[in-house]
Image (cartoon, rainbow, N blue to C red; front, side, top):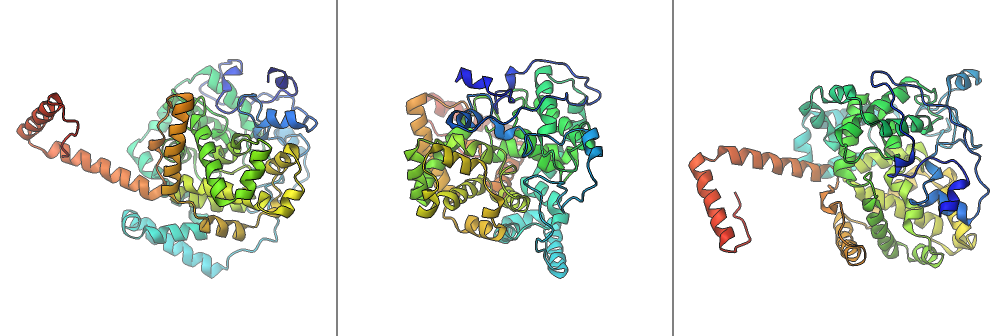
Amino acid sequence: MAELSTLSPSPPALGDPHTAPSISPSSSAVAPAPVLPMPKRPAPDTLSYLESASLMSGTLESLSGLGEDGSSVGSDSEINGLTVRRTDKYGFLGGNQYSDSGEKDLRVEVARQREVKWLDMFHNWDKWVKHRFQKVKLRCRKGIPSSLRAKAWQMLSNSQELLEANPGKFEELEREPGEAKWLDIIEKDLHRQFPFHEMFAARGGHGQQDLYRILKAYTIYRPDEGYCQAQAPVAAVLLMHMPAEQAFWCLVQICEKFLPGYYSAGLEAIQLDGEIFFSLLRRTCPMAYRHLKKFKIDPILYMTEWFMCIFSRTLPWACVLRVWDMFFCEGVKIVFRVGLVLLKQMLGSVDKLRELQGMYETMERLRNISPDMIREDILVQEIITLPVTESLIERECSVQVRKWRESRGELTHQPARRLHGTRAIFEYKRRALQEREIRPSLPPCHSRIMKRDVEQKKRSGEQKTPRN
């Protein structure tokens, strides 16, 4: 694959950004990203698809942030030179994710009623999650009101509580200098994130500065993970809805609770989920499964960007927001379901497969999903009704982990760390609180007795430790 890297000076691959030169930017201010010559898109062929999609090729062109013509709307002069244009209701000036003004909106009365219901849930959040979670899930599936989406995402992910438990931590992380190797790569990636969105279109603008602050802070917060390119679009979506500090803690929850291991070096977690995904595809859409297997199209070639960016660069924006609403509530199950629904829609019938006679045509379809093929209401309904449950994913995960260990050895990340959405995070938090409350409440003598009993049983060869 070495010769493939000469086709275009593309950015480094996800999770392998070590190839960039180290430049130490100032820690007190955000320097504008260097103006890089944007490469022209190579002529399509099988090698270019493998190059752009393979994790090991170091190119993943689909995350480069280029416009449709290979250009970028990435400098103040370019923006100032444009004819004044209206943004859509999501803030896009153009590009594939620009929404037509003809979209049908909710009636004002319905929108207000939904807002009132969500405000009521916020006031008694723990009770709603504990006793009426099905209602919370239903309201997320209907779509969170745009005026309350930022607050809802923070509550659903429990990042609001994380922020309150760490006052001043984000500012402390910002003051740290950070590692030059990560900062250089982050700076080069800033202008590639949603270049047609008003918040990120201007180089060195407030959107890019906040994005830099978040990504830099995460490399200091988790130095063992550092920075992965797929974190940038995820952080950018969060910044479209909330201030930098809230977006940072929300990103932390996504990386640590919802998708642990996705952004770590080696990308074992995404590779493992690729195997799980392909096995689930065999159950849900055998026709698509046989077609991809016939042409030896591995899941990693098309689902990497889908999963790691949570479809933020794949779907029309209205669909992206609906998917994220459900994702924060129900966890990675939604990501699997969306990918399966997309493959079913694109490869799930004889008529559709008749147009795809080889690997090239299939990859072209998977990499360039036409917005015209995706209707928000139909997509959401298919996601909701697809019979892929958390327990099914976990069973399949156990199978694939066993196969992985047999063929490749031990995993460096722990798949069991993943929590399936709001309810799982709530239960995890509740158990942690109970453990902290029980242990200090025990009298010292009782604690010593328990400790002595445990040590005796260990010495006698009994494996099970008595529960507190």
